[in-house]
Image: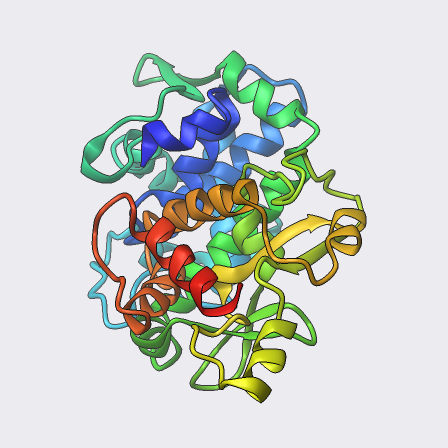
Length: 338
């Protein structure tokens, strides 16, 4: 998937999205580091003491730790595990507004050998095409040097959207770690609340994330219809690539024979104007090609978003592993409705 993802955007934004959206997650450390890197680069920083990076990173973990687990439910954490130290030091650190000495020391000690070593690695230890930092200096004073590629990411017009994508991915992964909710998401994937355009867990019908922020990164921040960038503050609509009205219209005549058109595989962020102009028309071949590539990219992300799409493929009998699984699936939908 990696070369194909770079086909649309060969630059550092694609590498950033691959790192955040598709890397393996046994903890949420990558998201805390990503948030910290974006903040520092947006300020124009280049050489930052590791202590400062670690302090921001630790506080980012604490801000999320109160709402959802940052490691899989049931994981045994040793006393020296960073998350266990964070749990013990949370109340005092939050009261101080900065990490305690013990928490800062734990972050400084663990980051270079853990999250900072793995941030650029994708599945199979394949590295991203661009790197966003390097750790330099001596053991007495280490410096995190932010690369020009990171500055490009942080200063791009899509930067606010990248932060929203990161936050959403963090929420999805953390909820997948939660007892009960996590098991439901991993086994059953997401349902969609069309009234609010949010992803909900099927077990508790609880909102987990917005559809747009969950999937737009896999579209490179672009409108599925016109393929132009969707500005983060611009008007956006969630389009049914295959119009929802097809199910209603055909179910009256012959009974709907296709897959659920209200599922994630068929929903895509678009410019509001593009969505209005498309109306109830079926997708063009260009739309379908972009939708197939978007869905294939999601299939390379960790669960539960991947599981949601995999269930749609399985229900249609096209749940194979080949690169053509989504084109085959979409042709199957076309034959059922168009």
